[in-house]
Amino acid sequence: MWCLGRQDSANKLKSVVVLQKRAVRNIAKVDYRAHTSPLFKKLDLLKVTDICCFQTALFMFKFSQSQLPSKFNDYFSRVTSVHYYTTRSSTSAFMLPFCRTTIRQKCIHYQGPSVWNSLPSHIKWCLPDSPKQDSLKPDSPKLGLGFRVRVRLRARLRVSG
Image 1: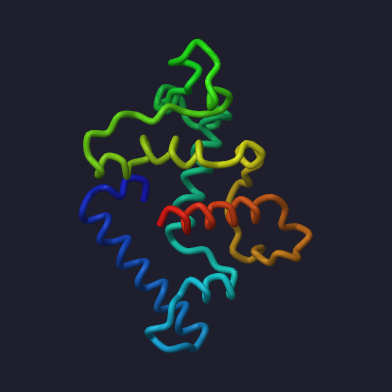
Image 2 (image 1 turned 120 degrees about the horizontal axis):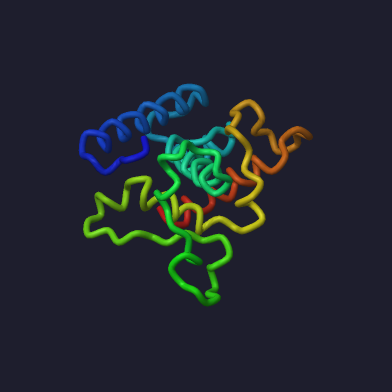
């Protein structure tokens, strides 16, 4: 799911999203034309696109903590490596690479820094290891910051999409 720029990958993701929406409608026992966003919220489920965004943020977290294989050491560049003076986003931001096409903008090389730079700084350093669907209840004491990360990602996706 990293590079959804290719036409066949985009079509596969679209069919997975359609199947997920159909499944949520069946679980909630509503009409086949019902809107699914309220159902996802009611059932405390993540959409496929939210999971993809969360996985991208987790990948960037692991990159910033040097927890990825050495092949990824030079994959992203920080703002501080380009600008030798203080900028508004120079503390923990990554440079967005130039992309001539919108297809290229859908790859991890562009989406990673884009998602990471959009997160608030207090969330960037507290990402959990994996999103657990069974721990998405807001009242759960073991929930921690992972739920707030997912809520912020959902809000960001709603605003942009």
